[in-house]
Image (cartoon, rainbow, N blue to C red; front, top):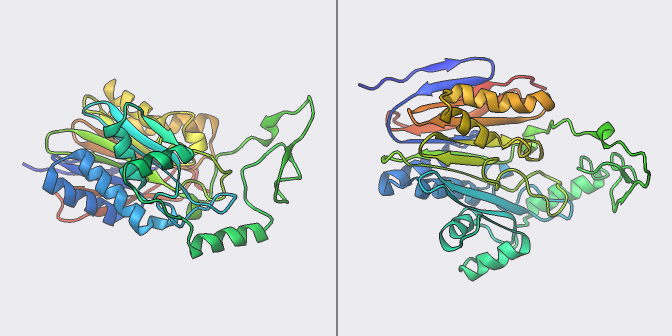
Length: 341
């Protein structure tokens, strides 16, 4: 007999449902539906994950996934993506992928056609081209306008510190401040980001009919990032993690902060220790808050017994989309976060 209930608190939502499941970060219900449609056809967690994240890449979800969004300092859009297979404990990922639109599918080619986990930069582009992907510009009129307006605003905001000219008032090029007595902690990053333009990643967890997990991410990263920057999204254990024996998780937010704590790995390991999905998500967020109380981010966790939960910090709310065997359509939950701005 089916039963499903929701429990709400300040920073997490909990649900218990049986059967197949697709859950993803942010208000991207069409991505969940694309994954679900594929899951019904193939019953493959990896297939569904690729379909769901690829939908966002093709439709530029929030301008934070796929081509034509989040230009870096040079005006170029680059992509990061990860697939983690909880059945095999294998992963494929790309970082700083340039001039290739289908980052998630390239990550799957890394998974299935190499013994590597992560390929980055121009070499990732070369790899993709060798696998038959079309090389084309990811820059659009929209991304060019975003970048032009940023340069007109003295390149604010940016991600430099301890350089000159003053990065809080000027564009580069920058050079290091030369002093033996530099205390970089005086300019320590709070971890807070503007989630209206930088909520970045689609993270997704899929559970198929054979109880196999897959988790993954796709993003074009932080807007105005320093060229070459790779965040948490393509890093196993940071952006996403899955293990059929314990559960799966994905994360979104300020990747430079979050990757230092491997929140997806931590959440799965806590479920392995017997914690519920809600406890695991809360622990993963609390670990980061201990050092960066203002950081912006969220974690979704799914346990082997069908519980799923989310926890978040540094935002007013965090929405996520869900589809499972007991729902007739995708639903979007929105939870309140701790330490909102």
